[in-house]
Amino acid sequence: MKSRATALAGAGLLLAVGVGFGIALTARAQQQEHFGYQDTPMLPGGKWHVHDGTRPQPKIIDPGTASTQDTPGKPPSDAIVLFDGKDLSHWKAGNGGPAGWKVENGYMEVAPKSGSIISRDEFSDCQMHVEWCEPTTIRGRDQGRGNSGVIFFGKYEIQVLDSYESKTYPDGQAAAIYGSYPPLVNAMRKQGEWQVYDILFTAPRFDGDKLVKPGYFTVFHNGVAVHNHAELLGDSNHRALPSYTLHTSKGPLLLQDHGNPVRFRNIWYRELKDYDQP
Image (cartoon, rainbow, N blue to C red; front, side, top):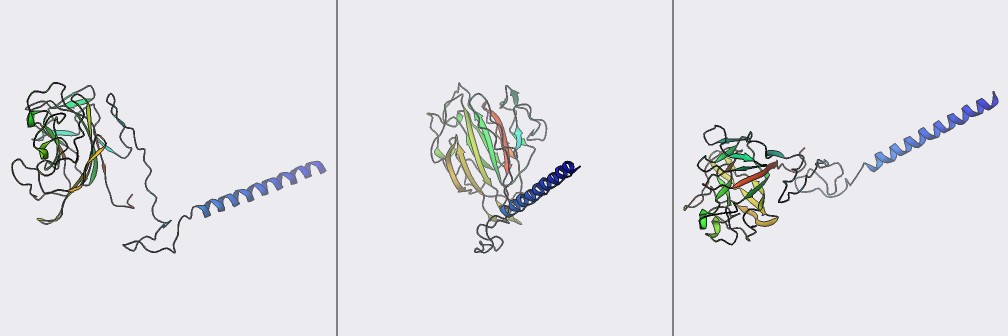
């Protein structure tokens, strides 16, 4: 009986020690969760201190993977996919009917004279990822070489063109903000290789029919910065000055049919919100 009582007492002591140790660990963990400071200066806007530990933690996402020439990459986990190589369910023709482009082998291809296609999704400020490929055999010169366009809201165009060892007017070459700015450098790969656009788009803001904030493009072509927070001068026009026309706060993406069999794959976007937003 005595040995049993001793054993029970020992077990009780171990349990008490374990519970106490667990409580201490929990308290320590809670103390460690109190990051940062509350006695530092307030940042502009008066909402957060410098190094404020109560500020919301950024959302955790899977960043995805990069593309290769053989295989498209995996989009970030918070991306909205517009084309995954399977079908055109996220696209429509200009008249609202089914998109008429060809889909095969994980890409879509412009079917000449079928018309431009428009995303069913609409967005505002965003990160847009588009991969495109020029035909291996191209006839013509200047603007006749693999011409297409990535056009935000059907108004603001990043040019698609075969500019590999081929010249045209600079604000109309590949990666130009059409009719406004040439790219800072020509980062083209040769025909038949996949090109990549990563575009940060800030949509223009209107108050009634008045422009109160212009739009902006930051563009990376094949990983190279070709536009750095470039202010949009207005709609992209041919042989005319760019000028703004009133539109809604959100709009679609238009891929242009310019009569050339350009291919596209792995198209997705991420909505860009203000800091501290969920």
